[in-house]
Image (cartoon, rainbow, N blue to C red; front, side):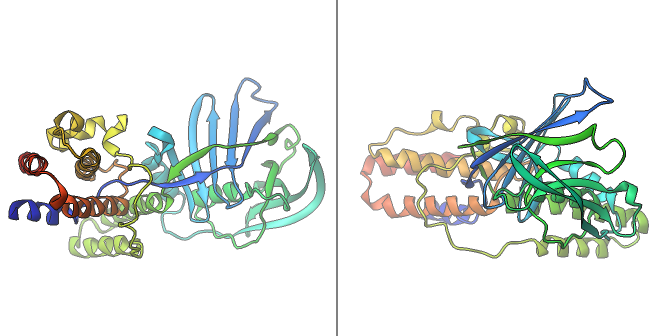
Length: 366
């Protein structure tokens, strides 16, 4: 009994994967590109949005896919996992590198949005033209956009968010709304631009924890800044560099909210079940490759379900050793603590046979 209790206490502090927030989209907006010079080039942009300013942008440039999630926290490149789960994209490191190189000194430029003459009606919706431009920059480099400021879906935030990522710009203008048309402000605007092609209702949804994704992106940015600093100082003061890095990581730890006792309607999704995690399982115990096959047959049917979830969360924890993992550490802690309480509380209710099987199973796990 003592060995089992110690086992539970140790793993009650382990971080693993849990269910993400469900995000519903009410509209699907399709954009197309008009380009008189490159008529054979295909660029498709689908935007799923809702009135909470949450957007999922699915862009495909010459069959090359790029998925971006946008909300009030910022912008993150994402990919689709199992069961409509969004994950940090394979391209996230490149995204971070490009964003850092856009402004390696960390100083952003100010963007201004200036209302200009000109309106248009597209898909029956009126829009007003604006110029987006860096202050004190060449006006020929500005972006011309036509925005309907009354539409409940704010796709301007996606455009603005992407610009901010790649330029580290500061934008305080309150302009928001549906972008109907946009392009470089030059003589070719009428023949080279992207425009809204259709709007339809949507019932699409995804599961995603954007805060965790943003934290991982920021850690990548911190890492790039750290490498730059090391290069500039020629590895002169490794202790100071480590201190700066640790401080950067601490800044992005979210405030703790106690949620682990809340029962989930569905069992949490496991990262080990993601096909992309197959190569990472070499860093986990062998039983993680086929948990179901090793579980005992219990008289108490609920015990099997909770034990499977507990062991799966422990396996997910081992994936956090990889830089490319997508484990939600906070959610993992909630899951594993909840299952530990369940297994401890139900123990006295189990039959002698089930208790013996449970003890033996947990004791031999490795």
